[in-house]
Length: 376
Ligand SMILES: NC(=O)c1ccc[n+]([C@@H]2O[C@H](COP(=O)([O-])OP(=O)(O)OC[C@H]3O[C@@H](n4cnc5c(N)ncnc54)[C@H](O)[C@@H]3O)[C@@H](O)[C@H]2O)c1
Image 1 (cartoon, rainbow, N blue to C red):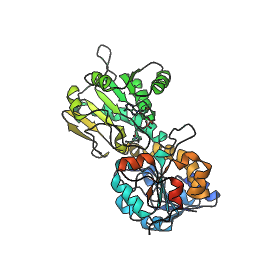
Image 2: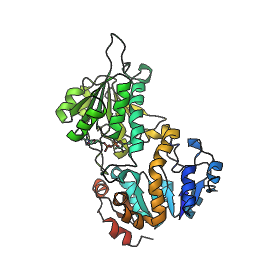
Image 3: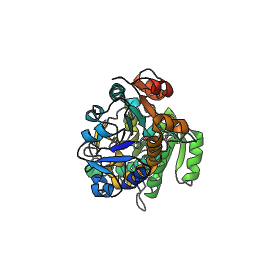
Image 4: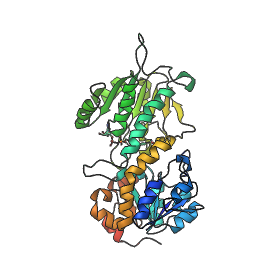
């Protein structure tokens, strides 16, 4: 199979979907790797390092999309990239379609088979291709929140850890999954008072052990959230319902319960956002204010630390890339049922139930869609 890797074009995105190590594994398995010139530069990987492992460098995205059987990316395709997709071509990347009807329609019209990193599941029903980026986003969420609490950035002017004789700040984390747990690790390390909210008792039980009792766990309900909001200096939103649009855990009229210049970090913004007042922002312009509360809603947080996140991402994706290249989508999902959940759109049909519900389009089972003829 010809596997193509274009340069990411989302604003402030410096990750790349394949490292030279991945190019080597694909080449050794008999596949051809086509990399866009400069695709790895943002992650400190130059073209020569790919060529040394058997890849061929192409001048632009048009050439990469035109020659590839499978396109590997990091972030969801931008409109100019959707136009380059063709029927039957495989796209493997983060998609986050449940909150993006326009992109879903664009991918359906392309006729491509689109496999989303974030809905691939492992044998335990966990999300192995979301987890590494969630680990990074969780750690960054606390860092970013601490920074935005500083007065010159519009924050309350409180230090997360306090000092002897002055109380620490209160960090409230809603959603105690991979993002939430990693946000808690850093907040505890910075000596804040940490409260993690979740609706899963099992998850809260696991967190109690993982965090060694150094954070309080709270069953999440409207009342428990409202009781904590007046105390919180930093609130990190990290909820997820697999494949679906994020539920709102803080509504606009609840912002008045919060301290002036407290900070909200909405990590779930890539799934539409879990605060009613959230809207996507970028690393260049990360925050805005609503009712006196700072909102940080960057959709590609790990893009800020590409030297860490490119390797964390590709360590996890490479086995799936090899499986897809070896067996094609039909062959690979036959062997790995968890990869089947990654197929979001195929041959013009939406094949993931939560995505179909999120964008209000009909759902077609994966096998039926793969057997259908792609629109021309
Ligand atoms: N902005 C970014 O750059 C970025 C990067 C990585 C991940 N994310 C996003 O972060 C979010 C969390 O990812 P994750 O890997 O931690 O997911 P996860 O599945 O590991 O954890 C989600 C947690 O949310 C809990 N939850 C669900 N609904 C809830 C509710 N109403 N109230 C309280 N808890 C609730 C679940 O029980 C679960 O423990 C996802 O939307 C993911 O796409 C964003």
